[in-house]
Length: 452
Image (tube, rainbow, N blue to C red):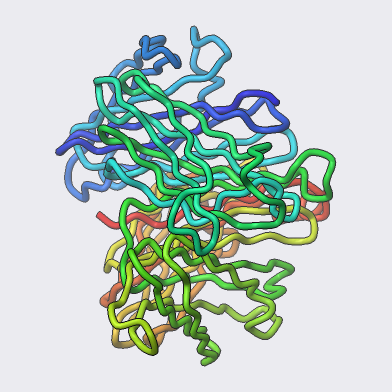
């Protein structure tokens, strides 16, 4: 296995602190780029960043740089002069609130995740595997403080009150990171989906990577998702697919409460499923078993309710995996709430053959239009959707968006989506044109829109 790095994000008061943490994954070597978007609609943000080695020593400090209002800056890690190849954590500080998105890739695999906006001492991971139908996981956990912390990972089998495996790392240096592998743990059974609780003696920030095991048909697939620092009673997943332009999804819901959760899953087709999930357990449902095939946008609302033996609704979390037959693969986390304004740190139009699409769901109680405003060279007037009913969805596709009709080749920028009702959005980045779209490799990246 070769080493890779993953970007994490921590906010401390008005200062944003970002971390890149190390991860061992099959394949590689992995390269990283991270994007910082200024969420301030009036003022410029001033930022800098530092690279830390696994022992907590600073190995690189950037000059200060500015990010214009609602615009972005890209940091391509291999392009940083004087930084030796290796594994690092990164702390980036800004004087305004910013959002971050991380892309990681090798020659035939890629994944994306958000920077974490608020560190915490406890996190929940809905899916961890050791050979779950040819998939395994690892998690990378960063110390989000300047002092050493101890980190514990408890892994739970479905229905178990006690962990089947506990992993620990003590005295993790300030702003450094540590990796926990699930591959090869004898306590984890093949083809069983486990969940995990990640805790630190101080604030920490984790990310989970799901990868296809070497030598299997899904070896190129790489997913990355952000665990949850708390649960909620309602979640929204704006993009659920059954052969949607060749893509399918799977929905995973984790009960992070203290007793059995009754969960109602309402699909935009009108189908309603109710399932009881034991404490410390996850439930996974493959979307093609639930919704019709076709190129129609579908979404889902997930609610923890009472009924039967369940007298108190339990907190839950949820996330979605998506993939297609040519091994494109990615993850995104579902949303507990919406916002009338969402920030997208990076969008593409033919940027090294990558295009993006932005799928937004109206999670409010009335119809609304959605307006996307781009930042970057050559952009035109904002694009506004038709009226979208409550619960409905709309997709903005950057390749054909009239706002980007005059942008230069290899365009990349950032965007803001606004509406009169709360919305949630996910962004897919993909090499989706011929010949790349027909090549078997994972060049799909997905991240979630960020609320201010």
